Length: 101
Image (tube, rainbow, N blue to C red; front, side, top):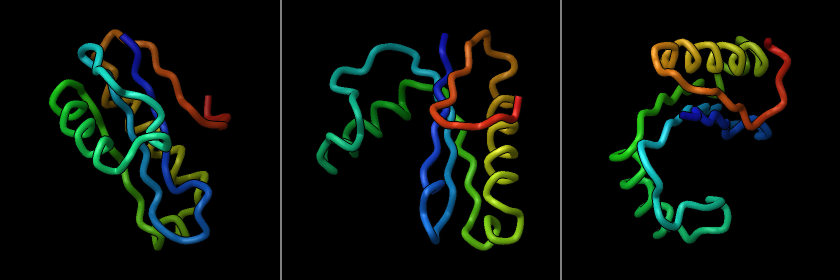
């Protein structure tokens, strides 16, 4: 099994930071790069993904990012997700640039 981790909001000037880790329980037809899908198709796939996966989402508000710092928030989110999946025999792949070990 593979747990994929990705974040949204890291490059924003303002707004929240969301980091998610997900293990799919099986193949989901049509699952591709979300940026290449219509909003309607993303919503349809969201239902299939949440019904057929194990996932953890960690969010930090823009205020928290300003107070704690982006790197600390990202590190905390990654540690939280890795801890959540510790009982799963899975490889963890992070789609990002971090040197948190």
